[in-house]
Length: 407
RNA sequence: GCGACCGUAGCUCAGUCAGGUUAGAGCGCCAGGUUGUGGCCCUGGAGGACGGGGGUUCAAGUCCCCUCGGUCGUCCCA
Image: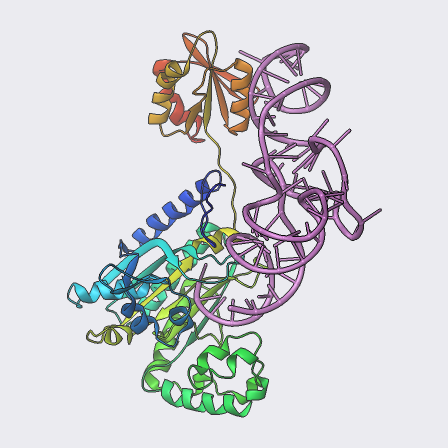
């Protein structure tokens, strides 16, 4: 009996991995072009970091963490999200100045697996720490927008503002009161959450409190929050980014304040359709024991994005077939200049019949099949064929796949 | 965490309801034939202790219990 991978974990291998490589490369290039530098934080941290950062009442922390003791009895947890670790790293290096960092890596949550929901899943994300400006919010959203469009995820952007310490308190109080009044309309699992985390109920699909009876945070925004949200909207309008304001968009993590946003994939039929989400977390640094530092960022789930936009499987550029005593090691010489020219080149490693090699070529979905017989190689693209010498291959490689160079 | 359905070759599945000779098909894979040196077609071959464990029975892929895994919904969130 072969040992299986644990529940909710997958292997991303060929042929699917080609698409992953493409998407992760796109992410690195795009986030880099926005001035976000790579950051790699620990995959496990002291449990306390997440309890304080994400919020002790949050289900992600209370029920969904992979928590274990190390050999000295300290409590560690696999990271369920990326922001807390980044903020911890920021504070650890002094807690001052501007940080614009991008990350990519696995996150872990002990949940019931489902389409688009795994126990180990892959997130990309950015954190812009040290700026309270609405321009930072806009920049981060612009990056998310461009990335999703590059990956090909059709989406809708929802935005909201949760207010700040000055104004959200009053809203929370009135919200609780309203929830208590219409507690009969709440779903079973949420009736006891009213006191603890009433915001949580806002994005529940089962709870049906009368929308008219619930206070809208917009009516509670202080002047500073109202201005900030207005600037964010102006910025998005200026960039031509379409969005819808949703009064019920609160996001699940405790650290958010002011701006929150969420991208929903419109092509996903499943219940797991949120593909990217984020917002501002001006109170997080203090929660973690540092001085107040503003910040804004987002995280996106690659697994879900690829569910929404699977893409196509890319094949080889050239498959070499050897005939007349031309073996794998000979083909390797012929492949070298092509590979140097940036092409993906393959051939059969085992000694096999010409027929079998051609079958392998077909299977590899290579655009060109190159038949190496002795002095030259006959490159075939469909019916077209072209005979080349070894020394010309590198040059041909750049031409063959560049429509500008091809006549 | 809760509920429903599912688990037989690499893949998609039939066989399970009415237990009974060496467990089947298609696709894929390998070899050969044909061919315009591969893609279509033809022939042959390899590959499965039926997710795992226990029980009932003369006999279990088939019935019962447990367990693990998958899918969907709920919950949660990316």
